[in-house]
Image 1 (cartoon, helix red, strand yellow):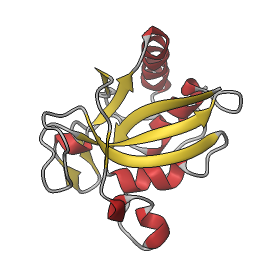
Image 2: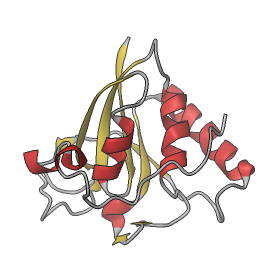
Image 3: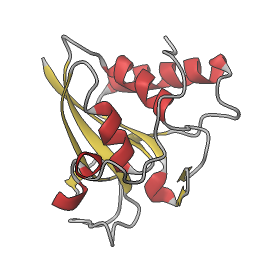
Image 4: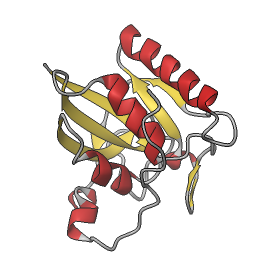
Length: 161
C-alpha cells in the first residue's frame, strides 16, 4: 500500500538526500508544514518547519522504520536547531495523521530516549497534520544538483529497534 509520512528535522535538503535512497521510499518532496500562512516560501514561512513528504510502500518499509532512520540522521535533542541552522523552521517534528502514527511516534521517542545514544531529552514535537506546501523547484533534489551543498544530516547510529 502506498502511504505518505511527514517529518521535519532541520534543513530539508539533507533529510531528503538521505531518505531518497532508503528501501521502500518511492518519492521525496521538500516543503513547509505546520505554520501560519498559506503558500509559504523560503523567504517567508512563519511557524512552518522545513519538512519533507515521504511517499512510501508500506509493504517494503513502515512508519516505524522511517522514524527509526529519522532519529538516526538528525539530533532530536536540540530545540529549534540542527547544525548551524537556528529557529523553529529547523525544529524536530513528526506530523501525525492518525492514532496509529501517534502511538508509533510516542513508542519510538521512548525507545530513543531509553537508548541513551543522544545526550539530553528528545524534544521532537508531535503535531497534527496540516497542509504540506511544496518548496520552490530550486529546493527540490537540491543536493543531487549541488553535491557539495550544505547539509548537517548524516547517519550517526545503527538502528534503534
